Image (cartoon, rainbow, N blue to C red; front, side, top):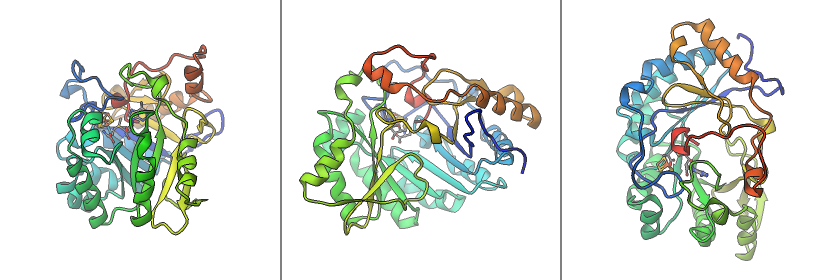
Length: 334
Ligand code: SAM
Ligand code: SF4
């Protein structure tokens, strides 16, 4: 293998998150405004061939894990064809998908056959009416159908992403935990981040995830540290004693995990982002077809990757050392 993708803090990058579109069929209150989003014209999105060309070079430098995200990745037609192209690249071992789950069920089999290994489904409420409000129109039955389809075709592990928001869904912590008792899934509680939150009063909705462990104890359940969920990166994992599934806490704001960051991001319009939070970007488009120039670009991106983000400073209202991204989460992919 060529040189590894190591930055100046010694962090080795073996994981690429690929946003395949900035469009979405939902409008979650914390992610997009109800109206007025400007989307990239289709001709400005990287084609599947261009994405595969970028991944091929990254794989030669040690990238092993990929995640397809968006916007909603399944609004991109024939996405399973991209999965198949990526799965055929030497070195790629793991291809995951993050989706809102609305369109996944009918395609579960095709994705599995194409080489998808894992799935994260975002679900912020288990109550149909509330889910419709949070997503501005989503039908929870479709999401639950996708969860079942993922189980049926054998994607493993299956993770449910829950962004916890004060006064909006924090009263459902117990219900989400209860799900793990019976089902072999991992519920991942994610701290609400100050990115693309649509002026949704981030500070007043933000809640630290200690609330999850508190609720678990109140319900009389013993949460045991649980380190065995594959592909978990920054998640701090627990299992309720005797449960089939597990739960994870991802707290990028209160306790950042930047020192072990192993990820690069590729936006749908072709920019490498070395960090989710900061504005720096490097456009790949003009270098596609020139493997050496692409590799140089990745190393330039790594070279300026800051040591950490400063979301906690944003929470405290303090000044920041770099410029935060102007992109919304739907334009980065989470
Ligand atoms: N549409 C897909 C979905 O919802 O799973 C993929 C893209 S979405 C941007 C990726 C993840 O980011 C979702 O789990 C979503 O809940 C999360 N997300 C979006 N905005 C967020 C925010 N401000 N803080 C924390 N997570 C956020
Ligand atoms: Fe769409 Fe995902 Fe953003 Fe919700 S979180 S609006 S599903 S991109």
